[in-house]
Image 1: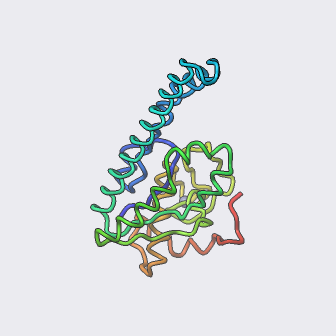
Image 2: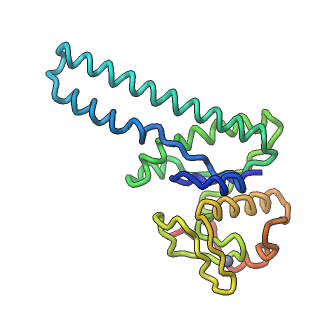
Image 3: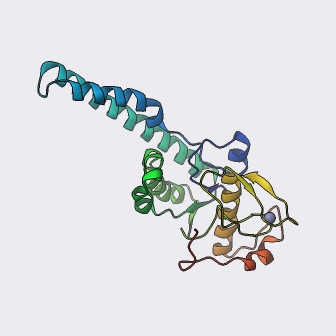
Length: 217
Ligand SMILES: [Zn+2]
């Protein structure tokens, strides 16, 4: 079963294989240059003029193109996940809250995370699977999936997770670690005690507190 972690970056092929990190695609990033150029062009034209109309038409077609690429990717990805996984663990992201964060809003709206979760919610049960949502306050990025130690000073820019517990010493891809945490947590919610790479998870997890009152920094 994959744990889906909405990383804002292309994950390595290896981690995607292991835990099903989203193969992140940003059609807008590729088309952004073109979009910017056309927007500037439109601003230069006299409004309502022949050339203005022409540029406006081009812009409209570019927006449509982007929407199509995005939707196509979304459906391919969700179908693949629904067909190949029995249980899918997702982070119940507060999409509207993320949109309000200006640093994150573009990459998140671009990856259509909200839409992706909606589609998964429909597709997974139709294929006989189950979608488990992990609470959005669960600090999936901050916990070490091996020992459960919490790294509270993890920044968005840190792409590698280094376990703060020297006895554990786990170092790994941030998205991969977060996805593994989601799997463990989803299975715990489901009432399964987990057969994860480390058997220390269940006991070590007690060291860490999380919940609506315990917000990540
Ligand atoms: Zn650790």
